[in-house]
Length: 413
Image (cartoon, rainbow, N blue to C red; front, side, top):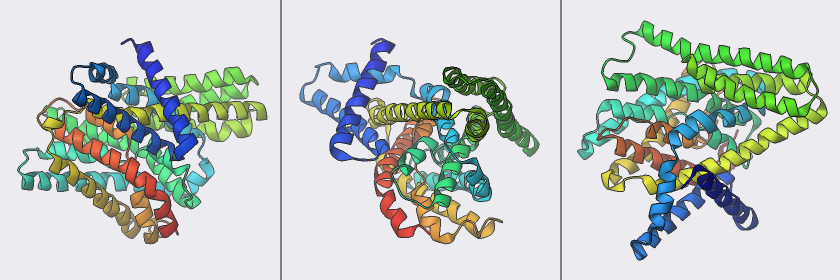
């Protein structure tokens, strides 16, 4: 199947499922498209079981295998989705909640990664599964950060207090850089000594990833802002923002800095200053509308792909007990990682303990975790880690996503 046919099939499926959801079900888009992908995967598997050799499973499964999910998400979709989320975020409100956002995105994510990895390693040993500690820590690193695409998509349909919404969106936008950094370090250890040798080198790598990403985003964002300020032509302004996203992401990758952080920084800068100082009302409406459209379309395709990825998982290599144990471990670790900053950091007052249940349940995982898991090197432990990642993501989107509104009404302070 050609790439054009695959893209056409994805768009037709996305449009069809989107229409059905809007017409009959009214579910949050993230939930609807993941459920649709799972339903389609189940229907294809059932058809293969009822009529072996019909070829439908091979055709659909082959098309899904042709899509390098990890590359499509990490090197393509993610940059545009992060920019769209950052462009639409109120920078003033984000500054006011900067402390809690940092506590959740940095301290909370790192603590959760260690807790998840350690607990899962203990469970694996108890179950008799030979999964090395470094692989359990890799799972903790890739599953602990909340997914910006999933969080922002689901929050659109949920009434939560403004300060909590800002904290969740800010955490989700900024913690991808931490996830990629931790996964990179652990992969180096897995490869045998390719990781930095001491804390000084770890700090240098972190500064290059985080500081470099922010610096690149500020530089490219400022250039784009000045270019938009100098003209009044919405067509060129749209092109500038598209070039900004792709160019910033590629430049950051080439310089071994964090592409997600660079794109988020550029999006926050242009999204804050552009509409206020550089764009006419007409340009602002068109550019903002375009990025909302890009966000919706890419979100829909991504969540459908998450559901379809079940067709290429090797279930025979997965210990179901290990996979199911990962769900409560991730939830409890998230609870501790959210509560700890609320108790011991300088932002304890801003992070009310009364909001911990809501912040815990709103920690939605999505395509970034699956993309990172798929990119892991082949090893006996990979199927278990991939299966656990997929289980947590599906539970997170379907169960937590569907019930987040009820939790918000009960616990929001």
